[in-house]
Amino acid sequence: MYATEADLVARFGEEIGSLQVMVSNPTFVEDAIQDATEEINGHIGDRYSLPLPNVPSNLKRMACDIARYRLYFQQPTDEVRKRYEDAVAFLKRVADNKAHLQIQLPITNEIVDDQPKNKPSTMPIGTSYTGGVFGDETLNKMPTM
Image 1: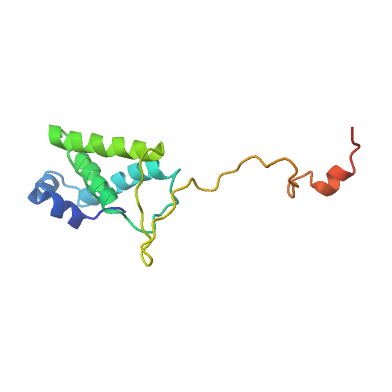
Image 2: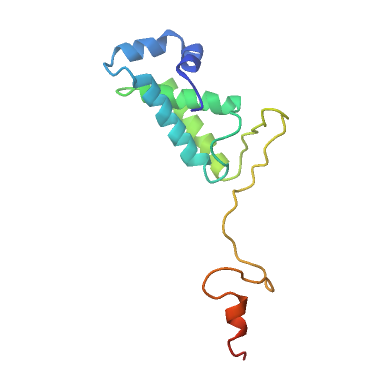
């Protein structure tokens, strides 16, 4: 997860406790944080390998904003809704490769290259196909044109 209950309390104070008192579910806050994590992963999962090696502070802030919005299950305030919408808009920009998360490796503090994950692509002309039903050996037995 990108945030904890302690992160929410540090950012929003007693507001989190007040929201939790209104619900009988003891895992209410953890569920909201998990929902926020899954929403974030849905946006950045095509671009970054998950789980992330290190959580940048801006992602932790967005996770808190999204979780807080989820905690307001009945009527979020305008400020809560605006922070949620801003977080989602930024995540969409990350997904569209118009913004970056600046994830640093824990030991070296090197910024992780956020190139798209390895996806299947077409092979350049002249490359030998080495797998599947029709390998080079089988193709060499076929008549040429």
